[in-house]
Length: 490
Image (tube, rainbow, N blue to C red; front, side, top):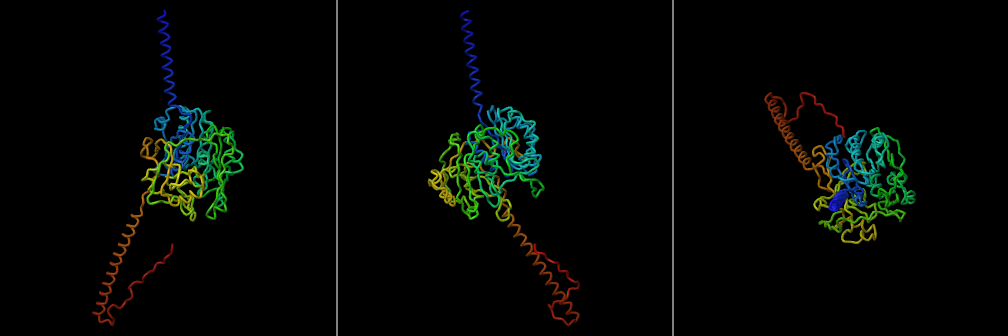
């Protein structure tokens, strides 16, 4: 009996050890916070910037760039569980943040069908205790209205950047400070520029505290939802819409505002401005303090390159409207609007960035070996240094691969990080075509001149033989009247 009792104790002990081992193994796959971002066509830079901001807030970030061959492509993923994203999300999470940014309409968001994205949310519901969804596309309100009755109880927050049957409007000169950027980076902007008011409001910011909830974000970046029609006949809207979760605390999701930059409109229009920086008023809150994976990565530029252009802060390679300690180096081409003709064009990054293999949106720690950015001595000092950059010291985080969803590669091919696709340069081709056209015109002109000269000589000889009293090479009237076409300058 004693032997059997000892054997029983040993069996129980082994079982306990095995169970503990299994639990430890499972806990290694479990993370508190995870973020999934889909960035659509022309918004890939926004996805990378959001990734860096959420890494600072201690999220494990999975980023997918949607790259359709055509703007009207509609992706429909039949089974998300077989995708690389589902394989990467192999654990169970306390909180999951899901962001979709890009173009959209009634059928698609970031070129993915809304119903297909809802199926992805259903997969998330199995993998997370709590879910926060933000849709930053046109007609995102239509998707939210259809999704709301089908969402599970663990979807705590659902927000969009537009209401139903409306496009999402934003300041085309301040694309880095739209709704999604301000909420999830924590850096807000109050400015009036070219009669376009930014979303953030100083009077609301100063009243926020550690217990502030999602509904107060609606007040902070409140802009009346103007139901006016755009060129396409659609209503436009600029506002944060909360469909679910107004009472959720911002601290629970680690998205408390960090800073508000207030600009003086008159000084901006004069070419210079002196912004005021307001830190989050409640000092009792624990804001994220995440250490860089790699600090003091030195990058030299020879020859030196400018990173800010003629005081035009819109296509600057650095987010100079934010506090100097948060300056990041843009490594993606971005669409911005020209001041003169209001047309969009791509502000491209220097080719040296690709040659140096700089990590996307790395934080700038020093410029030209100065201490301006490190010690926050003077913002203007750093801005001047950006006009001719010879060296930088950067800090960045280790990141996952960026996955690509396109017409050819499916969902399983990783893309090297850091650089937006740059369309081919057709300048040489155009020059060759112009030269070829000029050569053809010269040849045709010579041929016409030769024919005309021969005809005149033949005509003169016939007249001479007929004893007509004319001189050789004398211009003669054409046997048929010549029509001269009217020319209109375009």
